Length: 608
Image (tube, rainbow, N blue to C red):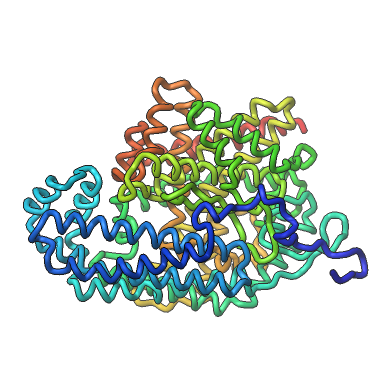
């Protein structure tokens, strides 16, 4: 470690320094690399077997069922191969062997898709009635039923066997922009050092940047903001071209699949009406008054002459802030989800004590947090836990995903276990809501209540308003490409600034770095993904209210939702919990609750 003129720079921990109980045990997937390679060879043999079924599917019910079962076995193995390799890579992105294994597994998945690309086009040459009759003779009639229902619904978008094969083989190329962004963002971009609150020079990382955004000192927030985004500014033309390429990719696949636009294609997978997307954006943007009021209230409470976007997430009452060690956070989360019932709590406790979570930030490890289910074993949760209150909420969030995956995988066959993102974010944000309620009940005074209200308002801002704004940005850049207009980094900078002004209101001041923030958002490489955070947040708040009001049977309904996987359309799954996302009401209710909480903070601070 080199010394500075002040004190030593705080080093990023090495993986060897972390206790094993805070690390993934990837042996739960494969005991050894040799086992991974044995499955790799088995998958290759199943790919070779695929040709035995082509051209014969309508001839025999037994052959059709065997074809389905062979593909299922292949896809399950491919899932395990890719997950093991990618998790190994995420532990340390600098390890070239893991990068190679990830690429191998991704290529194998592409080959598997190509090998069975004949399946849907050939099935669609069979009359619907005959295909249904064959399925009714399967040894298990409740495994492929929803798949076949979806196949029939998607007839207009399945192409010929030849075109489907080409599309399947293009999967690796299509991953290009996302892979480029990931390597640039996690491995190549270097962030500068700044001085923390104590004047100690600290090298920025994604996790440290997030923590500095909570600093009570505006100087620290500003330096972290400028230093962090300067790294993206230095690569903005590359990132702009890369994102534009990704959007062109989306437009290409939409055209080939004969969709009206990439939005229609993205939402069609879950049978989500496009009106739900537009309603979310339009309903929210029609009532941004409370969000504008929140910006002005923050400025007043923080006693700032000017308020910048980097001032929007620091606690307004920092003396009430506190660090939460990981083991303490685990217990708080377990206590918070008690309303979900003993079954839920026992599974969560088991997961948190069985190395489902990779806890700490280490050098070379991927940033952020995620949950990734595994049908053969258990979910794996990525954390970069740094003892903040926000990290405790992130743990609750990701474990919501993990329990959803676990319950669906335990209940549903592999073919129907994978749920849509639209429903997934309900499970995660409901856990956050329960944690907030748990902490509010423990609050001992007005200041503690203010701190938690502040935290919840900021959470709504980040999980709802930010995601709606991102969704609007994503729609704008897709529409530009689909209209044949050029999409440049400069244009994206301009659009981003305008959206920031629209959402944060007249009190906000933008600096020269804010316009580059779009360049660091990985979700823009996941086509029309972010809107689901907002719709799911609105749905989860509606379900949370049912728990808080003690609605009879809500535990059973909710566990049924978590156990239903992908066995039904997400809109219908939510209706079974009493939430209808085809109406604007859940969004309006979320806006109303946000406004009430802003008013409450204003009332409680009126005499401060």
